[in-house]
Length: 396
Image (tube, rainbow, N blue to C red):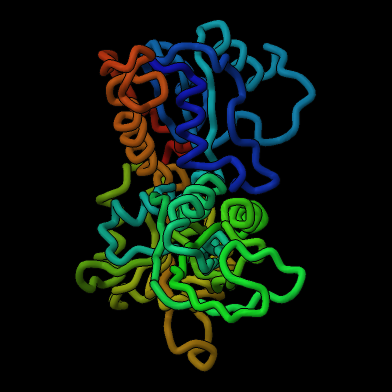
């Protein structure tokens, strides 16, 4: 059976806390990392009803999107509503963990889940984060020393990109050099031009590891002067970032697209509303789970016909849908759904990640217990059935 600390490591791999906004309060708000976990409840909000649900389910972890303590606190007395929830969870042995803005921007995060449930294709970030900065290193090595240099570079972290490591490319060629007086050549004579068959080894590496990689090369290379080339690769958009944009399988009118949104999202009293011409043709759709009004113009610039998000305001919506034709040739329809409903699809995603990552209950999510044999206890992951959308009535 995995420990809470095992789950926390996996969650930080999928939703790194370092990618959360500076104002956010993500991570563990209560709980002992040394506790064994066999049941997890995932929910959008940590509220009394979801705390009750976690306790009834016998969960050792309540994982929510929204933090329990978003603003700074100086105490958690049981007489305070949020303090009371913390006390109740601690007494019941339920830890609480929040993945908020770090889950918003993740590759398989909140907006990605919203785009998926809509059936969008060719999904990419609306406001992409740059991919990690990379260097491209070429090193010229005698053929018999290639393996030792590759090993040294690998230990330094070079050749690791995405889900791959030890990525290299080699080309054979001829090197020429003439040792001058005072040199100590590993091969060749002072004053004599030397021609030698060598290999050009190419590898990419995170730019932050540049110093370690160059030191590793110098230590493993047989020559006192190492010939190398180092170039900085241009910064390209990565798979993470705010919002998502993609294509519908086929064009829909705004009226039909709004009905589609209502059909695939959980029902709320708020419902789904749209601003724009009902017969406008929608092909490209941008989305942002939660409050994403500030990205409307970015959605227009990215070529979206409609933008789905939450918590839209009257004046900014008027300005967006009534933008003069002379300013933009592309009208942008806005679709507003309940905040909770646009974030709910992510619960199935993180639940699936936990089930697959800890499918056999291995203590590190690897599927093997401490003895190395396949574990027997699976982590039970439940998706909350509690509707935490605060709006409960809708009248016309």
